[in-house]
Picture 1 (cartoon, rainbow, N blue to C red):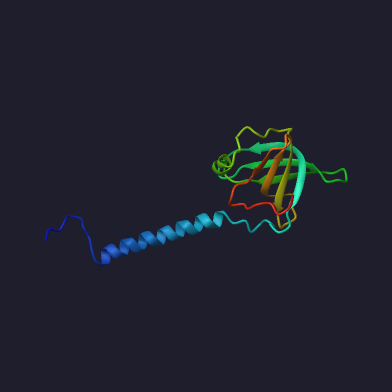
Picture 2 (spheres, rainbow, N blue to C red):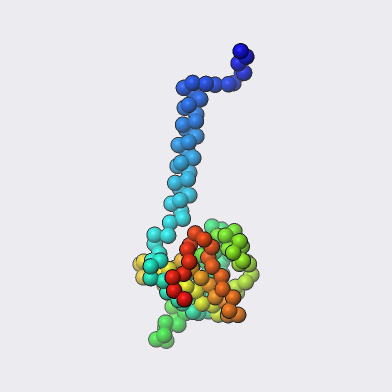
Length: 143
């Protein structure tokens, strides 16, 4: 039987395989930790209408800065976290579809801290077109 130079077997090969599996699991854990939605209250979603102050189309997440009147004459600034540009492209978004000054309505899972902001569930543009935030964020539970 012929043995190839550099071929390993036994404990050395198992050691390298174990190390590879351990590093793969560690890396996967880091990836899953990044995508936690634990800071948002998905059970008590809210609808917010306002004027876009900023639209940041960058990885790893797209952000919308939204100024909304709270009904008592006060303007509140909301930071709305969206999915990545790649996910949003797949569900029909375009990098230039929202501009400062646009009127929009969002349904968000608000921050559990009570600060003005949240995770986007649904976006409605002034022309009536409706967009989701992609699968990972989940669907709105209000309309």
